[in-house]
Image (cartoon, rainbow, N blue to C red):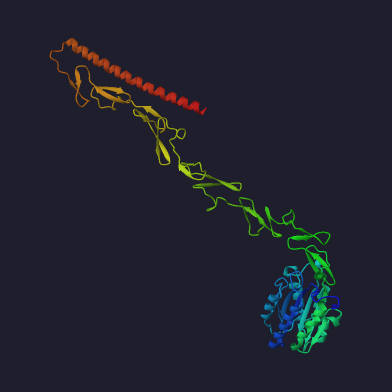
Length: 457
């Protein structure tokens, strides 16, 4: 009830409502009549104090089926609501009023669809506009809606069944049942609803003590807070909501406050899962995620770089260079290491030969029989050799063969014997030297084997 003598027009605003219009668009409602209903809805919206924190409005269209044109959470300004209403089209079949009210309970009066929590004490109101008799059992459905705290206003037009209107409406019936002869005069009901919904707006009068938001509640008010704040126990003041406090969020690893809400993030080396809450360790070695030139090795949420065999990691810890396989300590050749691309082979100094193990070397007896091409005498010389001749012979220019030396006097028998003796002695010495060289090689091999065994030990 308004008291114009006591309150200004600005103070006489409707109390906050969660208001749902259910309009009949069955076959009996002609197109031009349905347009009148849409005009009635628009004018009703003009009389309401529409807003997210004041009156929220939803519109449902029904015949034998039900269509939610827009729920309570969609629009919070009059212009958007009226624009949406102008595009509503009739369904043109049946009159399932009970189904429409049941749909309102199941699909519109829910917090997900914009209905405010019961703790806010915001009235839930339905205005049904129909011109016919329901073709379903509306009585039980309407009773369930009223028991759930929904206040029902029934508006009948022309051929509407008054008994059905009274069955579905809330008590007292004389304040919740309206009737007009034609759709042409339905607009007259806007003033009646304005008087019904009008209440002294304490919030508009400025006599409240709410710190942030005042919500008018009939002749009284409730305090509320801006998004991101919560009402303190004194029910007047507000405190910032720490949405990332323990127990207040669902983030697996990191909670980041974001304008009264929060988003989840993950530690380095992890990625946010599609649920936007939990985290999974990244495969940092997957293609495109690392900067290793050759080999990526994953290690506890991070990674390190490595190289293929035959390469070594550069100081930048990312790129690789071919390793010098013949560098000291990298090979097991006794004398000479020969690099061959990414591998190596062993070789020996001049005068030595590679043993069957392909690693160690033995001295070559260059004067052993069959290893030189000297005709008479082979003289070993540090891995090589030169040829010589017996006494009485001289080395030919080919440095290999010998010719008997020419003398101006005849050689005596005694001298010839001496020559033969000297030649025999030379052969004996050469043979002994060769045997001694072979012994030295055997001793060298045994000494090397002993040293290798000592290294293993």
